[in-house]
Length: 326
Ligand code: DP6
Image 1: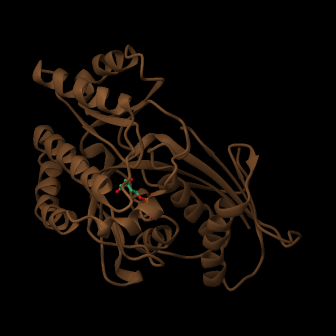
Image 2 (image 1 turned 30 degrees about the vertical axis):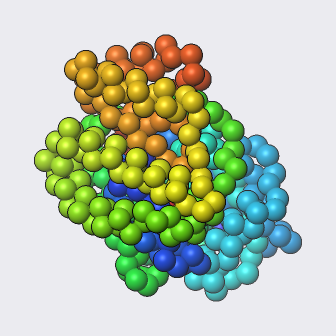
């Protein structure tokens, strides 16, 4: 009744922004990401008949309210599959700041799904695990897959899950996460997804994503960094235009975000291959190749607006261990 899992966050190169079914987290479009090795969540789940309620401890702190309710709702889904009503104690820790535009919900719900399913002895396929993780957090379905992943949007619960485009060892691309703020964001992604459609630009974005997906898939398979980087950058800006033009508008950027965007563009113009992408927060992810990653990391660290750089490479699918954490 106990298991522990470690799952990597992922960085979307073609973003998920907007849902067609809020409860089922069916996305408005397909998305592509890279699962990360150094931004991970480790979660221990213990279903214990002595408990009278679920408990969720995140980074050493007991949670309550909405955060606990979201974890509990996910445990309910797994309990329903196992035909049990035993409560669980869940302990989770992240190697990166929670809720600042690094997808902690992706690694969090991937780790919770992997550990919970193992603790309950659920015999689920990778596809079923991915779809299940999606119900907790959309982007978590991609973190159930190692390396380069694509979320097939689907139209029902069963056919909305992620598949692997290529394993982590296919291509070593680095994601240097320049952390500029560790504040929790005011508007969650879950709220943002329901606002996307209020943007007059949304229909245009969906058309653009449709034509971008196959080109990004091909660029990954061909290891074409410039095509991948340029499209990832364009897609991040496209998603942020939806955020900026939804009602109410969502402005996740800080002055430091813009400073980093300009720095990356300048370095690239000077010959250093690097591209940026940004999730629902102020932090900037800088995509780089291994041969120049160290130099770019040094430059990022030298910027006064950057408090920390988390250097990530391609990561595996969740790693599950039976029993309590070591
Ligand atoms: C900007 O997966 O966090 O990171 O399904 O409500 O949990 P929920 O949203 P979430 O949204 C991620 C949005 C994004 C883009 C992406 O990862 O594709």
